[in-house]
Length: 202
Ligand SMILES: *[C@@H]1O[C@H](CO)[C@@H](O)[C@H](O)[C@H]1NC(C)=O
Ligand SMILES: *[C@@H]1O[C@H](CO)[C@@H](O)[C@H](O)[C@H]1NC(C)=O
Ligand SMILES: *[C@@H]1O[C@H](CO)[C@@H](O)[C@H](O)[C@H]1NC(C)=O
Image (cartoon, rainbow, N blue to C red):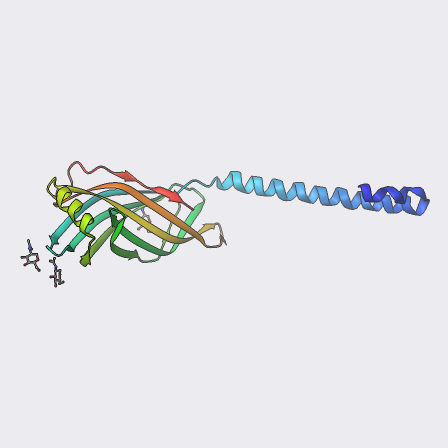
């Protein structure tokens, strides 16, 4: 209200000063009201983090040629959990990458879907490497790990998502999820598979 000060020198300024004071009070009240509304909405919605895990993983049809070309198929179970009671999630685009030794050996997508509130959904990811050329040292590592019956892989995915609360839909968010390390078995028997919780970055 510093700008109102010179006005108090005459009676006309006095009424102006009062007017400014009222405007200031109304503005302040509005700011507090908006703040309280946001706080109340936040407390009612209580957003919780989305949770992802890889619950199973196996490799099939593995063939690594002497020229370091890899053919294989991968079966992963991705579990997506939305713990929110008031928020549902639109997945508009999901791109998956499977990595071994920091090299991408397979890519895939999940079709767009809408995840309701308090919902857990399991996705069967059927991915493959078709004649993927590996670097010499990567192929060497893979051969060594292969002989132990399981290999350590990373499953990453990027998603474009929107949140829905009541009738309101949020803007798009880019989410990055990384699931590592995943110990993938060379057989259908997934006994002893270590479930991996993923890191989520929105
Ligand atoms: C791997 O692929 C090569 C070339 O395609 C083939 O000759 C070989 O029999 C395959 N090995 C297995 C175990 O399938
Ligand atoms: C991988 O599969 C392709 C055909 O899909 C075949 O031409 C190639 O030889 C295979 N490579 C290996 C290493 O099995
Ligand atoms: C989760 O949502 C999907 C898709 O709407 C539905 O098919 C599935 O039954 C739901 N699962 C649970 C546990 O509510």
